[in-house]
Image 1 (cartoon, helix red, strand yellow):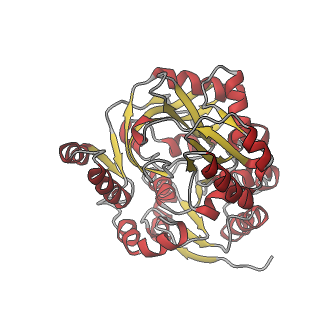
Image 2: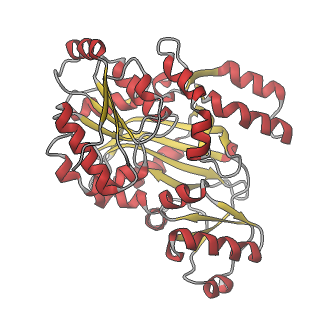
Image 3: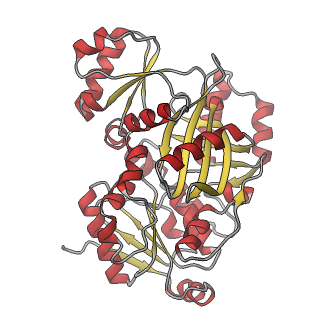
Length: 410
């Protein structure tokens, strides 16, 4: 394969890390260098563990003082190219035995499906496909959840427009993909809202054009925005959580179908721990995971929406709440025992660059009051990007806003 690697090394930092981390020559490989990847880089770097960032975008994690290597590759969306790029980087930089940390679902799928090949170079904590497919495809997620007695929203599927017209739909409904990557990249949306049959028909046709009718899910739209959304976050192994926290979204972007959280706080909610651990145990899951729920105000039930078999955007909240998720996973891969950790309630996280416009929109719409907004800012213990001990990523994120707006719709 022709090399497209562009490598930037930080030798002073690498030497310091290698001298302090107890397992010489072993570090983490972070695949995807946005704010989620930056959180992994900082988690490991602050434990004096060397880190390599691999990305196909202009990203901020490579500018962290904790990044040992930064590698640019042409494409991390194509499965075959992703695997080849990882292996090439591993060989060139001598990353033998380093631990892989994917940050996107398509990367999780590529690593899981090619696990045996990647294990020839790396430590691969991503589970086998037999486990990952239950998170990858929402059709299977909802099927298994129902079998386990975990509430899910009412959903419908149609193979054609005629099938759609014959469904007993209750409006409004959300049209969403069973497998989100192609839909997300094509539309920059997580889901679409249809208020009547005519809108459902038009949106179904558009969605089917992008992903095929068989992947389109029509789902009851649970009332409420981000404040009705909750999540279980964990490091799961051998049928139990070795690290966990439960959170509530206070604000998200966009407001109705949030692609990303902008303000999150930890809470105590044992029911979501019970639901999530039941599901993860059933699919024999290992590793880091986020399971998203929405509380239905009509019946009070917490209904499962999504399972992310990787780190999630606000995972750095865990460190402030007492659960250092990336380090727990890497330590386990190195057979270093750590005590079980559970996040304490009442700790908040913010991503300032997206929360400011989100909060302004909520203030204008009357969904958020000025006093409540001010109180949330004072309460925020963690910023997703800005850090006094590692300032460059925050500066570069601001500079990259136009690029991110074009590339991702931000």
